[in-house]
Image (tube, rainbow, N blue to C red; front, side, top):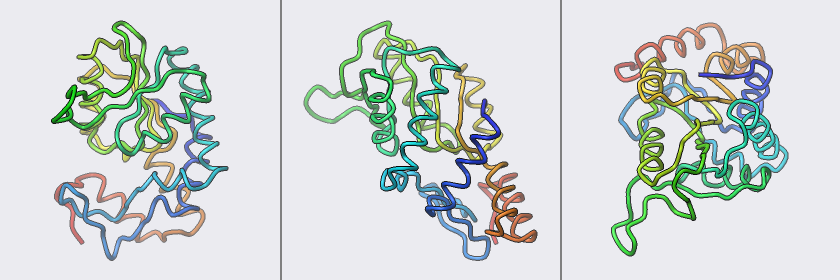
Length: 213
């Protein structure tokens, strides 16, 4: 996983500022997977704040070219990364496609929506990385469609060990704007959480699938 310290700190500050990330160690959230969690991240909120979405867009555009070189196509992972992915593609003057979680049940049964030619270099835009499983399924769908996936960029990652292993095993390079480590440091510094809550949030990340209050 690649990141820039200054960008990670700024991204954490912006996500906390607009409540895209909520921290609550006493009344945890329940994820779709059933996991109990003291943190909830909803990066869709970014699209409602022009200055912040422009910052995220510009950081993506700058770092995509820096880390991977300019691709032929930007691909967003449905549904969370379609909006920001399209903004990045527009900023870079590139075509945009998006990847469904699974092929449509009707029509042409597409999983990749948009115009994509075999052999084109693609960067995948994701909003959030937890285990990485759904993100890497999107990568596989693009490869099956003939794309040359150069890497993935994401707004935020929880930094789970399982995700790092999954990306490593899939040979996919991941660049993230924000991450859990810098989020916690900033949250303590800005007094969003206290030291006791910090310990709870650190414990959760060690074993999120079995954690409970």
